Image (cartoon, rainbow, N blue to C red; front, side):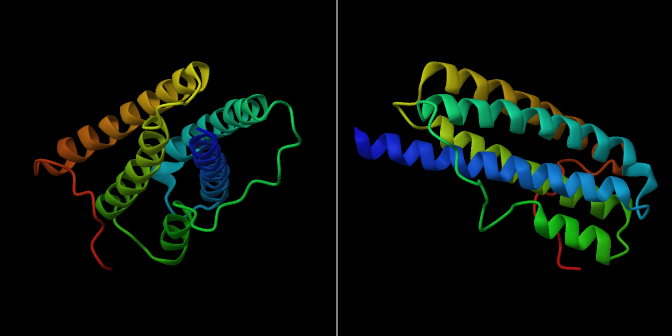
Length: 162
């Protein structure tokens, strides 16, 4: 039982780190002028992730019985390659939407992996489920935009090598 608690606490720690990294990425992209048509999306996601991060960090603090929360970082930030590609390459809107969708799906997978733990506290589970549903709604909007603009069927989830 203690081993499972440690496992989901570590997974929660990783998710908090990913939301911080995601917020940072979108914050950086807001400051860039490379993709002006995406600025509204970048701002929306930046502030959404800032809110998610605060809620998750508070929950992490609560489930760790008010112990001091360590400096939370991830060794494998999901959104770092997205930031790098968007800042260093000149991508088409189609490539941008595919890349963003793939990264958002990877973030939702982090939520799903955490929600799979049996001993996760109910309040933590409810918070995670709510945020995951918000992210799924964002992904569905991206897919609808993709299908509307490109009329090609399902959105590609793996970006092509550029």
